[in-house]
Image (tube, rainbow, N blue to C red; front, side, top):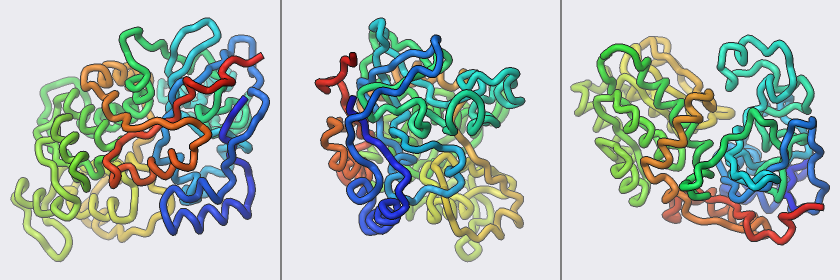
Length: 391
């Protein structure tokens, strides 16, 4: 079968780091990723199923891995060689079309009893991602035993499979997994659903795939007073408005806009007031610093974009009693709600281009520069691969 394989190769990883600094996405051409003919992954148990991907998305964490900008924190919780790709819609052997829930939980790993987090329904916080019946891997796409979506075949546990409605297109289905991340972020940012509670003002930093999906999720929850979004490019500004943003501004306009909306004053670079909740969908030094600049005293910054290694001045976090909180993945309710969000908001239109595996360098370069090229989500299209049927 055909698969893009990421190997443990220190020299090529160093080359990817240099190339990625010169131009985002270039690490794919110089790093340890290669298109190979490999044996399909073995089924870890009789209940496991083989999934033949139709579409598999390219996300920010994939790009960070390829450009060697991701944190060494992940080293003990991934296993090599792995095939990337965790945003997957594919077919089972019996013809059913499914979306893969990539988190490798205690149930997937065969761990009984489950850890306290999985037992409480917080599988995204699983304490056993490097243990149990599988090789280490926080998700499918980072585990050598499961394979990933950037291939013609991978394996998944029944707990990881969600049936795709017949009326849902592949373009819509491939966005269910990232949409679940957005639903999780929106739900955490706007508080509990019970009781009238005052609707908070929310700022979303970034209007790439994750930022736009988060705007759509906030609009669907409808528990906010207003949403301000930063967007660099014209198509991002247009989509953010269509998906429910009340104010769409360029990144350098955010502080001025929040100051106007909240009646804050400015002391140096810091607003004296601010907006109650900021959702950072980028995770860079600049975006995190901006989030701390505009969040209100006692407010919360939800870090949805993967931050990796960052250097920040955290004085304002201490002085203003701000909560800086990670926001990773989703729970079952978030994932189920993502199907409705994708359908109701017509999110399939965010899939801008698809590529065969043979053009993986072009695909990754497009994904790395999606905003500047008028695109949102880039995905691999496995539907036309000649080797889809395995012996």
